[in-house]
Amino acid sequence: MSVLHAPARLLTLGRMTPDGGRDEIERMVAVECPVAIEVDGFGYAVMMMTPERLEDFATGFLLTERLIDRADDIIDIEPFAAEAGWIVRIVLAERVRGRIRDRVRHRTSDTSCGLCGLSGLEQIDRPVAIRPPAPRATAETLFAVLRDLRAHQPLNAETGAVHAAVACAPSGDIVASAEDVGRHNALDKLVGTLARRPDMAVDFILVTSRISYEMVDKALVVGVGLLVGISAPTSLAIDHARAHGLTLIALARPDAMLVAHDPHGRFA
Image 1 (cartoon, rainbow, N blue to C red):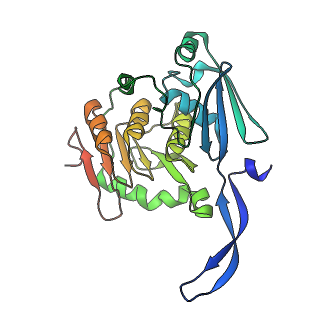
Image 2 (cartoon, rainbow, N blue to C red):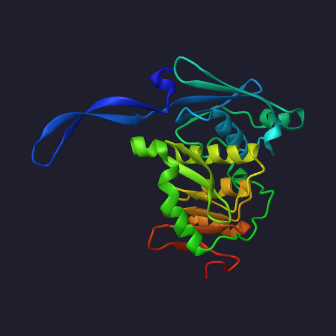
Image 3 (spheres, helix red, strand yellow):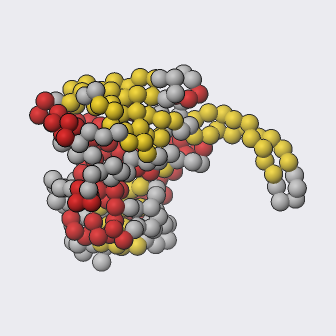
């Protein structure tokens, strides 16, 4: 596997200290490379991301783009290495094939925001198929997940440069996780994993990033009852969560959390 196609690579870097010291160290650095998404022969997007678990990513990306409704709407998915990065070629089932024809566009983006390139502002407010249920987790459960989170971030432990998204059972057990240099990409990888493993019992999702509109939107696609982030939310993210009944907790720290929206009074 070439260094471009691995999730991390070992580099020699310079280091300096406040006392004027200079030396060289070897350090693992997260790989970022272009991944082209081709759907039914159309070039749909080029994402800058960590080149691993591309089948999961592509599945989650198409779900959050509303190009498919479930994982089995994908007839075939084939990632393959190219000279400059990766290409993921996807063939859709006939029942959803018209969506890509209606909304074909080519975009280059550094994150899978799911909004770039839409033809009008009215398209931002896209339908949500599942009304979020009341979460079953308790505050104690959330604090316990934070304590366990690092064990599910092996790439970040190596590089210190990637985001994570984790899916948690009502008990607080982390049942699935994903990492990527892009916070949206990490969540799309997790969305794809859950879609391809519908047997997983998931109560909430935790992300190691700020919570923006599109992060809330991706959680709504999954159908979980609660989204937790370790950084702050945006105003539009809170509005989107409130409009659709998603419980939203931000600034999750070992000593405190911010309850941005709690429609079921679970964390009152």
